[in-house]
Structures are given as C-alpha cells and as structure tokens.
Length: 320
Image 1: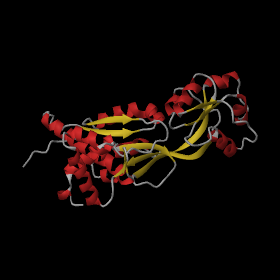
Image 2 (image 1 turned 90 degrees about the vertical axis):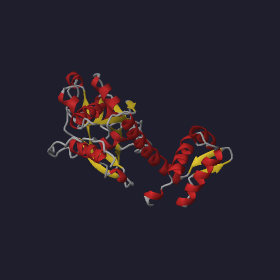
Image 3 (image 1 turned 30 degrees about the vertical axis):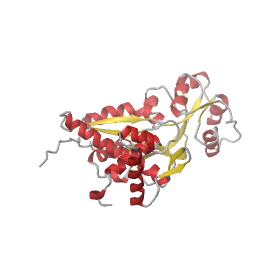
Image 4 (image 1 turned 90 degrees about the horizontal axis):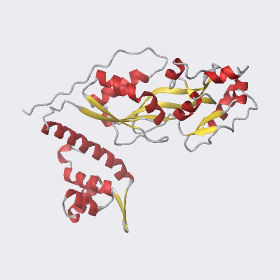
C-alpha cells in the first residue's frame, strides 16, 4: 500500500477501539462521536479487505488480522509521539528509546550490564527492559526480544545467540560435606533442584540429563521445583541441592566460586536464546545497532569477540 494513501485517522480510530475493545470508550478518548469512530474502522476494514473486529452482542474482540495490526500501529504512533515531543521540548531529537524484552533469568543475569555497556557505546539510545514471566512469545510492540525457546519458524528475524548446555552445578559446601565418587553419587545423595518448563513435566530436565549421561536407575522425581533457573541457582548458592544450569548463563557465579561443576558433563535440551527482530525494523539504524551489539556480545559463545559497535548519534533533521 502506498504510504501517500495511508488512512491515518482510521488507523488512529482502530488503535483506540483495539486498546479499549469498545467503540464508546474509543470515542470518548478521541473526543469524537461513536458513529465517527465506527465509520473510520469500517473504512479501514473495507480498504484492507478483512474484518479487524469480531462484533458480538455486548462484546468486541480482535480478529487475527486485528491482533497482528494493533501493536504495529501502536508502536508507529508511539515513535511519532516521542519524536514530536522531543522537538517541542527543544531536545533536538537527540535521544531515542528502544524497548527490549528478556526472559526473567536472562534479565537478572545480564540486564544491568546490557544497559550499562550499551549506553556507554551508544549514549543517545535509552533502553526500556521488559521481563514477562514464563516462555512468553516476543511481543509485537517491543523493538527487540530475547526468547528462551527451541528453534522455530516465525515471521520475525531470529538470531541464535547460543544453545543451552545444562550442567549439574552446586555450592562448594555440597562437595566439602560429602565428596561424590561419581556423577551418579552426586545426583543420588543430594536434593535435586528442578526448573519448570511451561507445558512440560516438572522433572523433565533431570530425566533428560539422567538418560543422556547414562546414570542408570537414579530417582530424579524428587526435590524442589522452581519457575526460573535464577531461583534454582539462588537456592543452590545457599549451600544445598544440585541444579541443572547453563554454564554460560551463570559464568559469573562459577568464576566467583559461588557455584561449582563437580563433573564436566553437559547435555543439550534443544533450547537456546534467540534474538527476535521485526523485519520492518531491520532498516532502522538504532534497532540495527542494538541488534548488532547484542549478537556480538552474546552470540557464538565459543567464538572470539568482534570489535566494538560504532556509537549511534541521532541528529535533528532541519526542515528544508
């Protein structure tokens, strides 16, 4: 669709209705009549040839097309609003905000360093970090999203940062109290700490570890279950239990001696950390700078580090 004919008023009405799921509330928010909002939405639906809402008695719901369009429209209006506000406030358009989504454990381990180090290299970019619980799919209204998942085909551009390798980690006191003669003894004689995967059996990871490591008949259906790897690691660092954790994710704790790996045995469970970018944002120099920086910072765990990312400087464009 040619941008010269984009129906901006209709898109604004659609966004208001989509956020409120109410024509009445949308009209009140836009300070126009309900019939005007309804006409705009009907015009937009006719233009694209598909309904955006399911109109039920006393209920309004987004269709699949509406659900896909709403976050894109909202993000576009948000960017316009921020840019115009900067200009009105005579900030010269010198800053830009990006929203990045991270899984909870990744955020706890790396969010501070990402915010600090990237801001040092690109001081004109402000980062807003969101951390939804569970294996949440990347939200459409964020600029980039880190996802803990198995490889999958999506509409986004997905960059693999690293595949997870799980190792049995524990506090040094666990080894001092009773040095295990074997990996099987370590598992048999200590409390097991489980990390729950959404829609999966809660003991799945330890079952996979036992099978792939050849531990034989070892009872792994016992111990404590946590919603995140970070919580399991925190419990292990208190001095009790053995947790299956990714060594790269907890490299700082291993280096500090808060966690140890008594046996150099690791398995892959098929999950990895992927960076998702919307295809339409690849041409955005600021999004591209953060994407490149994250890939260089975290991608290819065993690969040498690449050179520094050139800072992004945003300049106000003067009207001709």
